[in-house]
Image (cartoon, rainbow over all chains, first blue to last red; front, side):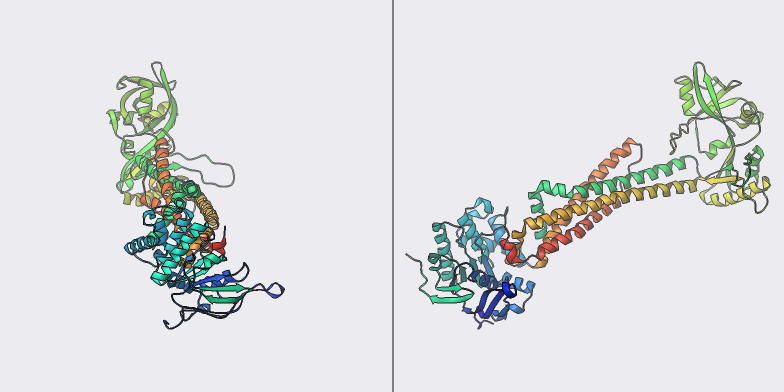
Amino acid sequence: MTDAPLIRFEKVSKIYGKGEAEVRALDGVDLTINDGEFVAIMGPSGSGKSTAMNILGCLDTPTSGRYFFRGIDVGTLDRSQRALLRRHYIGFVFQGFNLLKRTTARENLELPLIYRRETVGQRRKAALKALDLVGLSDRANHTSSELSGGQQQRVAIARALVTEPAVIFADEPTGNLDSSRSHEIMKLLDDLNQTRKITIVLVTHEDDIAAYAKRQIRFRDGKIASDTVTRGSVPA
Amino acid sequence: MIWITLQLAFRELRANILRSLLTTLGIIVGVAAVVTVVTLGQGLTLKVTSDIASLGRNLLFVLPFTPQRAGPATPQTPFKVEDAQAIMREIQGVLAVAPSTIKQSQAVYGSNNWFVPVNGTTNPYFIVRDWPMAQGRLFSESEERGGRPVCILGETPRRELFGHQNPLGASIRLGQTTTCEVIGVLAPKGQSTFGQDQDDIILMPIVAVQRRMTGNDDVQQIWLSAVSAERVKPVQEALASLMRERRRIRAGEQDNFLIRDLQSVSALVGSTTALLTAGLSAVAAISLLVGGIGIMNIMLVSVTERTREIGIRLAIGALERDVLLQFLIEAILLSCVGGMIGAMLGLAGSAAIAYAIDVPFVLSVWVVIVAFVFSAAVGIIFGFFPARRAASLDPIEALRYE
C-alpha cells in the first residue's frame, strides 16, 4: 500500500445528465500525485476542476474510470467507507472557511478528533498544537464570529491539519480574502508543505496563488490541458 | 461519543433557548396534563375509598326493592323490627344489627330551627356505623323498648340549634307533635364522598319514631356489620336466604330486597374513578402526540437551516450514524427536558388543585417515570425522521448550501 502513489486517476470521467443534456465534467483524466507534492489545479469555471476536487476528496465517485487513493479503489467504497477514508487521511480547507458557528476555535479543531473517538486529553493537546502551527494559540477560545477572515481560514487550516492527514485539499482557500491575507495563507500552506511534508492539492483560478505550488495542472473542458512543474517558491 | 453529542446537543438547544422552549411546549403541556389527571385521579380514588370505609367497618345493608316486571307497580314490602332481631339471632358472624327508619322533620329549639332527617334506630347502630359519641349517653333499654322521646344529635343540628350552648338535657321540638330530650351528641364524621353531610342527622329510638312520627311499624332499612372482612361474604349469603324465607319468596321468584356491602360499592367507585382517570389520561396523551409532531416540525426546519453544518461534519469524517445520532439526541433531549418541566408543572398543579378541592395529594413516582419514558419515546419516534434526513444529505450539496 505504501508503494502505491498517494493519488492515481485512471481514465476518470464524470458525466452529469443524460442524452442531449449530457455534460462531461471530467473526460478520461489520467493523473498521479505523490506524497509531499504541492499541486495547484487551475482552470476557468466549468473546466472540471471542482468536479476533480470532489472526486479527489472522496466526496464523489467517478462515473467511469478508476480512482486509487493509496492503492485503494475509491469507486468500490460505500458512503461510510469513504467517510472513514476522509476521517483518517484527508483534510479539507474551503473557500467559505466553513467553521461551525457559535463554536470556539479549539472546539472546531476537536470536532474531527471527536469523530475519530479520541480522548479529551488527546483532543485538547492536538488542537492546541495545530493552533500553534497556524499561529493562533491565543485565539483558542474565540468563536468564529470573533475572528477575522484570515484568522478563520487559519483555524480551518488547523482543523485540516489536526488529524495529521496524508493530504490537504484546499478549494479556493483565498477566494474570500484580500490579497495580503491571501499571501499569508499561501505562505502558511507552503511552510506546512516544506517543513512538515504534507501533501497539498489546491484549487484556484489566480496565477499568483498557483505560483506557490511546485506543480500546476490546468484543466480545460474536462481534460488536463497542461501539467507543469515549477520551482514552486514564493514569488517576489 | 454519546456524552460529547449530548453536550453538543445541549449547547445547540441552549443557544436557541426560546425556540427550544416553544418546540417543547407541546410536550410540557401534554406531560403536565397526564401527570395532573393521574395524580388527581389517584387522590380521588383514595378519598372515595377512605370515605366509604368511614361509613363503618365490614358494613352491609338491606333495602326493600321491587323487581322489574310487567303490569302495575307493586308497593315495596318494608321490613319489621323482628327481621333485625332474627338476623342477629340466626346468622353466624354478625357483630351488630340495627334497623333504621328515617323521617324528615323540622327541629326547633328556641328561635332556631333546622330541617333534618330523624333516624329511628337502636343502640347497635353506633357499633355498625363505627360512630362514637362526643358527649352524653346512648339510649337506655327502657327508652328503646318504651319508645321514649329522647334523641342524640349529629354535629350539624347541634351547631344549628344550640351554637355554643350545652344541648344535654334540653328539649327540642320535632315537627308539630313531638318533643324530645337531648341525651347525647355524636362525634363529627364529616362529608361523605357524594357530598352528603353525614353529621346532618338526629337519632331516636326506632319505636319512638314509628309511634310518634311515621305512625306505622315499618323498618326502611337494616344495617349490619360482620365480625371480620372474611365473614362479609358468608353473612351476605346467609342474610339473603334468611330474608327470602322471612319474606316468603318462592324458589324461582326474584328477591324483593337488595343487599349491599360497602366493599363492593367501594370497589365499584374505585374502578369507575380509575376508568375516568384512564379516559382523561388518553385525551391528555393526545396532546403529547401533538407535541411530538411539533418537535418533528422544528427539527426538520433545523436540519434545513443547518445543512451547511451537516456538510462540514460529513466532510471532516462524520459517518451517517454520527449525524443521525446527533439529531436524534437533540430531539430526545428536547422532549425529555419538556417531560421534566411538564412533570414538575403537573405535580405542582395537581397539588394546588388537590388542596383546592380537598382531595389528598398522592405523589406517585411511577406516574412521573412513565410520563418521562413516554416523552423520551416521543422524542425518538418524531426525532428519527428529521435525523435520518440530516444524515442522508449529500456532503457536496450540503457544503454548497447557502
